[in-house]
Structures are given as C-alpha cells and as structure tokens.
Amino acid sequence: MACSGDNDIANKWHSHFEDLYNSVKDPLSESIFRARVHVPANVSVCSYTTFIQVSDIATACKNQKSGKATGPDDMAMEALTNGTYGLLVHLAILFNLFINISYLPNSFMQ
Image (cartoon, rainbow, N blue to C red; front, side):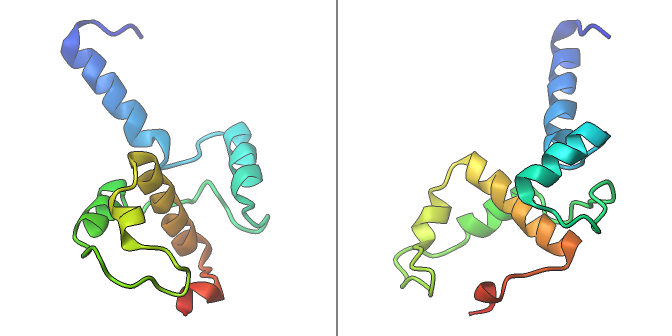
C-alpha cells in the first residue's frame, strides 16, 4: 500500500516505530530474537507483553538526581540521565524481558 500525503507518511512511520520493539510476529524474527537475547527455549516469545514503555524509562531517568554516589555496579546515574534514545530502548527491552521471563539476576538485588 502506497503512502500519499504527509499524514499517511507520518502514520506509516508511527506504526513502524510503535511495533519496532514491542513484539515478535513471525517465526524468523522469533529465532533471530532468541539468538540475540538468549531466551530459554521453554519461554514463548510470541506471548511477549510490553509492560514498560520507552517513555516510562525516559521519565524515570529524567526524574533522577545527579551527583549521587554510585551503587555496587559503579555506574553513575548521569550515565542513564544523559544516555541516548537507543539506551532507553534497550533498557525497556531488558526490563520487559525480566517481567515476561520472570527472571531477575541476583546481582540486581544488591
């Protein structure tokens, strides 16, 4: 389907980016997804649900205070507050995987 006019083009891009990181819709994409994130074989990727949006991560990072001491990972909050959109996307994917797979590394509990 061809796009014509600014609104059609904008809506097409909106749909593209809305779906980009929110689901895996075909078997080939699922196998690529599993290979990249090492999802256990007993977990259904097709039932992946997005609980945390990139905008949620952006808001949480924006609301953090700067100049605080680092945690056990020696990561300064400024690394997140000044991070790029790509970082926020990857954090959203990571946190959604934690929820969907029901797994949280022990090191995250320190």
